Image 1: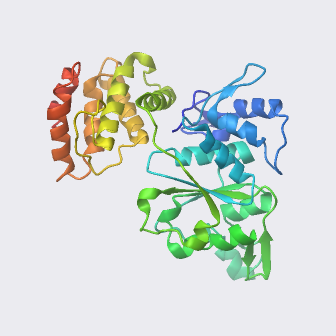
Image 2: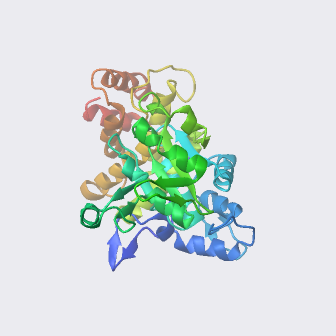
Image 3: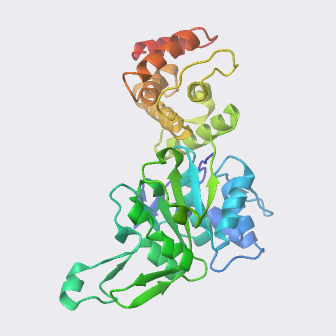
Amino acid sequence: MTMPETSATTAETAGVEVLRPHAEDAFADELTALAAADDRPRPARWRLSPWAVATYLLGGTLPDGTVITPKYVGPRRIIEVAVTTLATDRALLLLGVPGTAKTWVSEHLAAAVSGDSTLLVQGTAGTPEEAIRYGWNYAQLLAHGPSRDALVSSPVMRAMAEGMTARVEELTRIPADVQDSLITILSEKTLPVPELGQEVQAVRGFNVIATANDRDRGINDLSSALRRRFNTVVLPLPATAEAEVDIVSRRVDQIGRSLDLPGGLEGIAEIRRVVTVFRELRDGVTADGRTKIKSPSGTLSTAEAISVVTNGLALAAHFGDGVLRPGDVASGILGAVVRDPATDRVIWQEYVETVVRERDGWKDFYRACREVGA
């Protein structure tokens, strides 16, 4: 699944610390070290070779001793297929349930390939066609008519002209007619501008990374014509509890340090507990396989576990003794689980009484859950 930053957590723009630096800024040292050590063939306009891009995502140690931190924890082959896709003329679609690091992976892929992860179209129900194609500066348009100066390039158009990687987030949330504006771009590698009688042709190095939530199918499902233009890579949930604990611990540590919150291994027991609860409710069975339980309506993803633990750390820091305890995470878990008050609350109460109450070493957590209203 995903991954954590353990290098710089703040960047400075004009002397001001930003809350969340772009990947290419936060990991500039790692990218520079990889580029210096990378002697393998690079596709046109790539900052790194495909091998180095995969190393950047998966982590490793360079010959000079530089440690590359993992940005993604999961099957290596998934990242290799994704990187290889970007080296061809096929666009890449990262598919998965919420919280499987699709956005995280797409940002780091763009940072490693093009050195710029900001050529981004954020998909929503209100995303217009101009966000993918181009728009107009209406003051210029009214004053001088259609001209190149009046045209406002979209991130995708800029990526085409400069041979870079564009990102389209939440593709299935974009209206179907707007989605289909990508078809000509991806198949013909050109973007017509009929108002000017011109076109923008993609420069070598151009490609698109899109992400989609596979629980959104049926909302704005991709047409078969558009889906054929993508190579789809499915990002799974963490295969084991230990892998998920590792992901949550790393990411929480990075976020905690950026917010000056206490961290470290003092709260690892509570992190393990949060992950156990989420996995059991997701899977519909306890970890030992002995007890079947009902699953709530939410996804209970790894990203939500990270959010619950981070919020718990903030509670411990500002209203406790700085050590993450059951009471600090109980309310966060309740909020993550109970999305539908009518049904999820019953499921959660049943889980607390039949599983949490009877589990050895979980009495303090049981009391905390009862206190917040389980």
